[in-house]
Length: 118
Image (cartoon, rainbow, N blue to C red; front, side, top):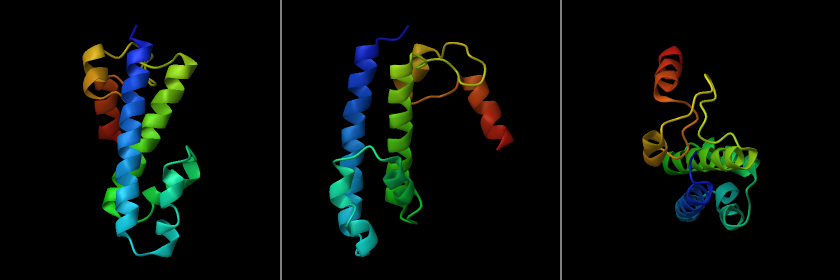
C-alpha cells in the first residue's frame, strides 16, 4: 500500500500551490463575480466555488479549479481508505503511476478505456 502520510503531504502541498494559482488568476480578472471569490479560495474547500471557477471561461481558472477538485477527491479517497485503487476495476494502481499522477482515479488500462469512450 502507498505511504498515506507522504501522499497526504504531497497532495496538500500541491493543493496550496493550486489555490495560489487560482488566487493569482482571480486577481487578474476584472469581473466582480470572480474577484470577490479571491479571498475565499484561500479559506475554503467548498466544491461550489471550485465548480463556479471551473465554469468561468477563463482557461487558467478552469485548469486550476479542475485540479483542485481532483486533489480534494484524492484526499477523500485517502481518508476513506480507497486511495490507490482503480475506481473501475478495483485493482491497485501502480505506485509509479501515483507518483507521476497522484490524483489518478483509474489504472492506466481503465483510464485509456475511459478516454476512448468519452
